[in-house]
Length: 428
Ligand code: PLP
Image (cartoon, rainbow, N blue to C red):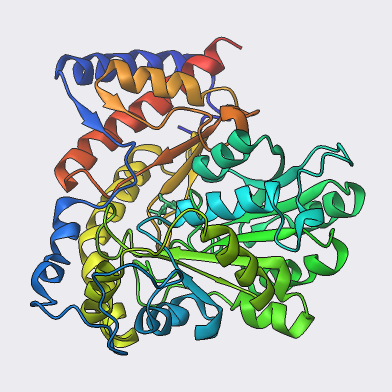
């Protein structure tokens, strides 16, 4: 039955069947959680060899004692390794603590209050007293939006397409609003849609620095740079190379981490930036730390070593993640098929599946699933201020639950989507 062409009798009969199925699922007393975009314990265990890998050798390659203070922007071997993930020169890398989110937050905070190009360049220029605005492609990552909210940055949305953010809309906003100081981007396996930006999108991002305010910065969060599910997943064009070609290197800050490579709570975060940006960032950073955890950096460089070793390790993650993503997709396909209830697609990497219900139904589906013991990410979470104007986007996180739990949880989700859609149709 296709939902768009179903007649009243078909809808009524579907409602009765689905209500019975929903009641049966509710009676099972389930307690399942699809909210957590975090690695499973099996994935974390892939990196347990790191614990003993230093074996008492606390020296960096240049002889530095890793246990002591110092090394504000990280050890050279870590810069060499993570430069390859960021696709920037080693000299343009800064290694942080365990979370790239912290580096993003600090970069935005410094740009806001102190400026990346002298005090006059601070976004929060009291003399000018204009709002500070960011462009937020939606659906997107809730914690990016939370950073803006926390720093008092107003958020303007543009829709995501299959090739990245709608760049016509991005350019139109930048051309018409001089208060825009930044844009969020998750360019490979974006959170939550799984899109990989096309080469044209990357090139158009690289050109933004020419039409935007001089203090405009792209927050290029390449969190899933090497997090592929399949060997033939689409590649991402280097933003650094594209900006270099355009002469706009100062317009981009590139972020990454090993949170979903080694340990989500004890990985290494890194960023790439132009020489001028990096100089300002190091300066501001120096007031808050004497240096990051170099011991953990060395554990990581000994463990991940070089790109072939790094990518072979990622393939082990993919082997654990693939069956989970496939299970969610298989159940959704079997339950929802092409019957017009919802739209989703199986990504080639990253950590999420994004599903769009008919407008107006996401919150209902979340509530119905909760009442049947399945916790979903709150409706609206993928939009600034937690408000999805269409009330239709749901973010599914398949990495943490077992395949068996995912099967049941996705069945509950699908039944809720169908029942909510049929009821919406019946009620007019
Ligand atoms: N960026 C994106 C797009 C994410 O999805 C996540 C985690 O889900 C993060 C950043 C968090 O990264 P980190 O653990 O390095 O702070």
